[in-house]
Image (cartoon, rainbow, N blue to C red; front, top):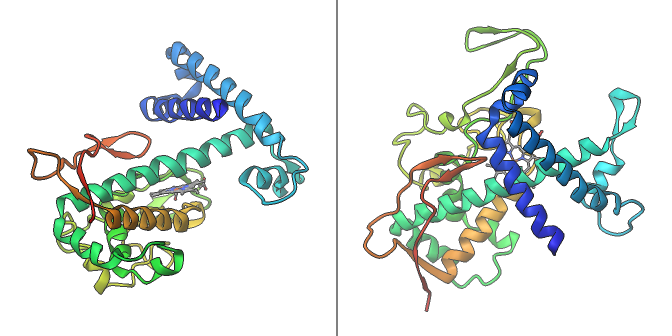
Length: 294
Ligand code: HEM
């Protein structure tokens, strides 16, 4: 348990460092000299991370039973580089990325959805009608809950917890929107804007889950068309998107089934101002009055 607590603290510091000092990852020869103190802190943090993670990863060698993420990293061979295994550094980075990419985003999304439901009691009441009397919320039950699914999609459209994706490398000269983009450059996309485009989404800034009841065709993987891209697109698209939506549906459904969510005393609504951290968080974390359902 102690190791897990330390890991949590360390990962929080790492994601905090990435969002506060993004400059450290560009022009490294210069930033290394200019921001010596921050560099030294980062290097020490990385060593601590390796010290904690590597024994856990290597302890999986020869392990029987259910497979975990570390097992797949130990088994992976890099075909383009003579079939070599991953280095310790690569495995630590991938485990760290996996933890940060999955937790901050999922927690932020849940908070945004609950805040939307506090501000829209009519939507919350309609959702309650759908989830009441469903004690399990199994995957099968969730698949028959269109309003809950619509709420999660609407929150992903309005509050994608990543505004940008990871930089994507251009592999051949190409044309995007009339601009020539040469091979070898990095490009990024402001995916948050896609969901706010008024020509695609009428009343785009309003929380209206009903729009997804009438338009079942939104392609969240962006393979056929791009109307919103909360999980990115293409070969680097979020590999956890199915799990992420399932978690959001399960937790939102359960929290509304068990409790009524109201604004805190003295307030009519909660403040939806955004704050840029590793994910896009609520600037003022959600405070709500929570009343157990009878
Ligand atoms: C609401 C929850 C989530 C959101 C909004 C989200 C969003 C994203 C986005 C926008 C990207 C970048 C995609 C791109 O560059 O095109 C990404 C990458 C990634 N996500 Fe998620 N994600 C979520 C949950 C998860 C979960 C639950 C997992 C794991 C179980 C996960 C694992 C990853 C990983 C490993 C990457 C990096 C993929 C790569 O480097 O190729 N994410 N995610």
